[in-house]
Length: 172
Image 1 (tube, one colour):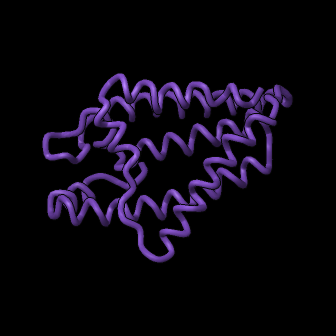
Image 2: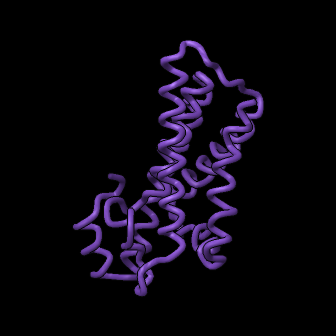
Image 3: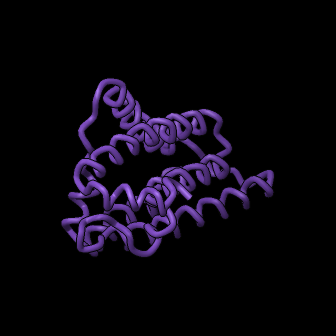
């Protein structure tokens, strides 16, 4: 039953993005060049992704205690809405190639942030400690990948991206 929690994620992340802009799907799948420990983080990131998805197949939604369940639903819904907004804004970057429109005026990485919130919601809904560990691994390794993406953006866009970094926080 936990797998059903992933259906909105896949519909938003892949289907909505491909409907909005097929080129954006390619951009979303691109990983910046990785060096040294970043490569290890990348593999852990991919493994944690797979573990989250597979493990949710075996988890059940727990409705008690009600406080945790409703908190989880709220966090899950917040992550879903943030993902929709992020995907829409990601589909149409600024002309210079840097996403600075919509939610990207508030966060340089709203899509990653939405993943974090979404998966934390899944943790509360399933009340799984092991899922929490997988999500924490995912968050930590995502941060390393984000740092490599920022380095790539600085090399690609130069001062314009550095100025963007000064104006907009990495997460929120």
